[in-house]
Length: 285
Length: 64
Image (cartoon, rainbow over all chains, first blue to last red; front, side, top):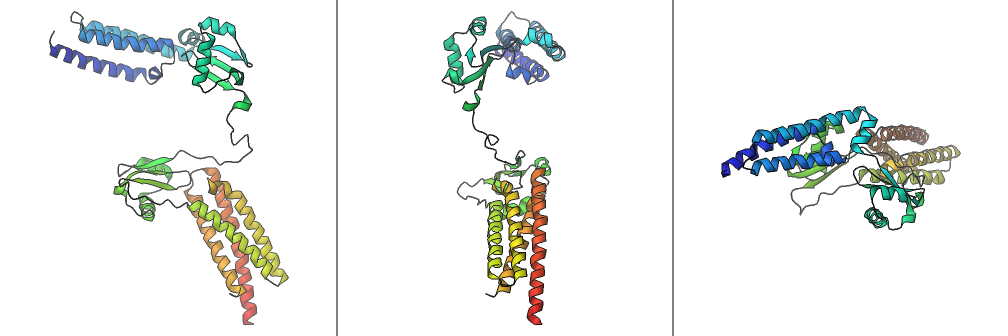
């Protein structure tokens, strides 16, 4: 067996494995079930053996890989169709903690000691078992933990706080190149990008990376790390302007002598206040 | 500064707010934000009209 033998065998198996992994898809990378885990290891092992094993026939290796991936592919399709089959192939989850109490039976079934459970919980940042409401061992062997409500992180919803929803930011410039696909999603055009960059005092070819957020604010990172583009927060400026104008309207209502004028200014000051309250969440974000 | 001048200054600020709200309403991708900002723009427009009318009235009184 010569070096060239190893080389051309390697090339063949790189191609075969590449094609097989593309067909099997992303699910196999995440190795959700034990079966996928084994398939992954075996495919690599067969390829390795055949590449370096002198007496191995290439076609035997390819056949092994094909059989394994074909069965894996078929089982993928069957698990989509049948829930029973899914339980057999992917396995069931095991409850470890329910209603805040440890289920010793579940631990015994999966042969986990209490130390193992404590270690898995610590891995999730939970150091006291009494904080846990529910914990379940997923088929993949990962522990999922539901903390008791009082131990869960505080959310805006808990505080009854209204936070406007935001869309995913779009990356419109990478390496000084405009990504037109992303730009189209933001509903802007190249002219707008140029104008916005001009405001920041730069041009497209000097920008390494730029994103547009929900509100159409553009933020840019330049190649030159010495110059820092200023990102004026126009939305917060507008909020300040609204507040100031509202105060001015109130002031006018105090200053004026005529009753009619006074009434109109007071009314409009109130209207401005309403505007401010309505859009403050959007301008603050 | 006379009262009329001060009112005019405030009117200019309101016009600026209306325009800026319009820009933000158009450049937002989130529908909720678009609606809220657009409504705010319309309301700012109403305030603008009210103040504008006041200015006309004051100017007319002055000349007469």
